[in-house]
Image 1: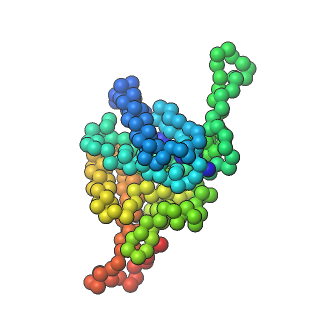
Image 2: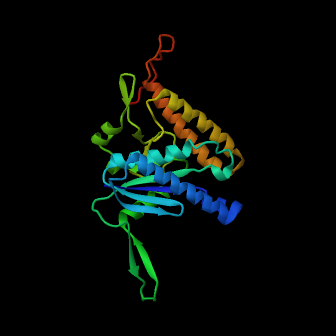
Image 3: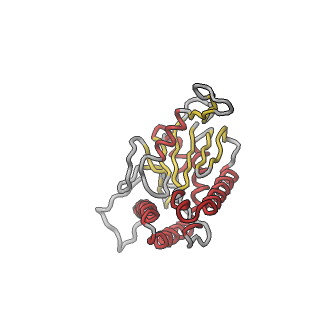
Length: 254
């Protein structure tokens, strides 16, 4: 089992620029995106969780479901139509961590000392782990996954054919920032569909250009662009080389 934790970035900036109306609109869109992701990934294996303002947490029965869910939400967010205006352009960051025993993500309890009609919600340890990983300081529209969840079975379940080889879209990248140990990137944007990959690359370039006027957003856009560049390098290393482009010193990443 595992927890998928997704967080909507840039909420504070929306408060500053558009007040309650802008934040409510962003929360509503975030809720719609998560709901659509659950419908696409299949919610039967979601054992607990929910959406609260600008974050969502789901306790998933298995890792493939967690990966499908996060991919569905981030893909819908990333490919949103005409997000040229900043209020309509959303960025989501996530984390997936291991859970050893079924239990509620949070539990209400009386305050100490008791105060009439007031209670405190205490988060489970795995839920706190998920929040901690998501807020560990990495930038960009990325999902980090706890290495404890990554094994040969999961790798085989998500591998992507590229020619006669396979690409595993879970790895620790060479040029992206990590401030947490024992985690890898879930490369949700990778696909075997060449047309879809071209669409992703074009959308990334467009989003980077639109974000240029906002320093905070540009940091996330630039970090996401680095991930896309690394993904393209990996894909290129697995494609068959033509007779005029062969480079015997070029490494192949598996």
